[in-house]
Image 1 (cartoon, rainbow, N blue to C red):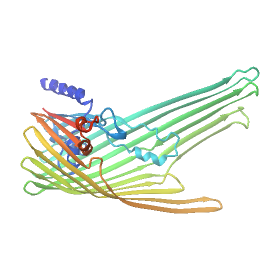
Image 2 (cartoon, one colour):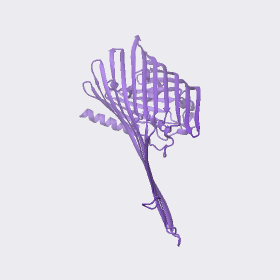
Image 3 (cartoon, rainbow, N blue to C red):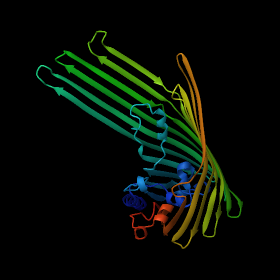
Image 4 (cartoon, one colour):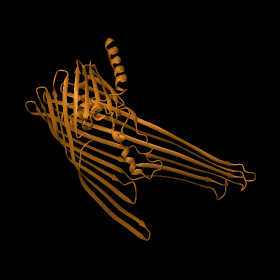
Length: 458
């Protein structure tokens, strides 16, 4: 009972101090140049929950990320709070609140012609539920993630004219409801070949959904003309589920003392369709030819996405630290077939991507980190037109390619880890912080750190 009181108290304390959230050591990942493909970290539990048993009996929090310049926020963005606990022998459970997951909202620009485009609310207040079981060499895990949101809109307006002999009025009522959400199920395994060698595999099935429903009613009457009518328009658009599947595999394989090579491959695919229903009615004189009413429904073509990640790197264990890094290839392809008259394809290839991070323990309570990330890429866009407008047949083809060098806002990052017994704090300082400096150096109100994470082990 005493242990549970301690756990609850620490959780409540982190909620107050960190902002009702937690996400693992993102500050450490940023500080090490996003090279987390190539070393083990508590963040791995979200990619593969089979790692949960390696990070049990912990409470962890993520303070968040401060945006700068035009995207500056008064409060940190992307916060979370989590707890992992081993409840019986090899069985471990985990719960994380408010973890942010990239939502496929970018697919909706393919449906730009929908009334109300851009109003789909981004899913919020996500939560993860995870469980793992550790056998002697085999570790199995499963995870569930869900987030959602809902928005409503109501607009009413009316005009009334009571001028003698010409009384008339008109009113319009427009109301709508928009919902969105993401639900994911992840499963995975880790197999220990020996003390310094292991392989892992994971699978994720996600369902992205969005729905918009709008209704507009227009009413008009005129006593002078003896005229009145009611016009109603109702439409519903619904994403069919957006089934997305992702497969991944990775290995940590020691090839020399204290040095592991780390190969990785990930493949994902998704396909979306849009179902629509539209109803219209115009009631001028019931039972006459002036009345009009119709309904229509349909399904668009597919919006497809495929992506592939291949990486090869390694990590070297130092006497009081680690060096990790490697090269990556990322290829993504979008195909838009929602319009019957044209097809659009977008392909992005990032090759190579370079990540490198160094971590070293300066004292028992202070660890220093430095990392960098750099990408080189190529984009390609294709438009194919094929449609009839009698008596003409239109055909067209457009292709555009370019190459570029891409790097994050923080090409180079510096971080620190502070350890006080079982309590750890990781802090990340990006290059913007390094060059702009604090208030004393720059005269600007800047944060010393862009991101802070905390972990307590019990």
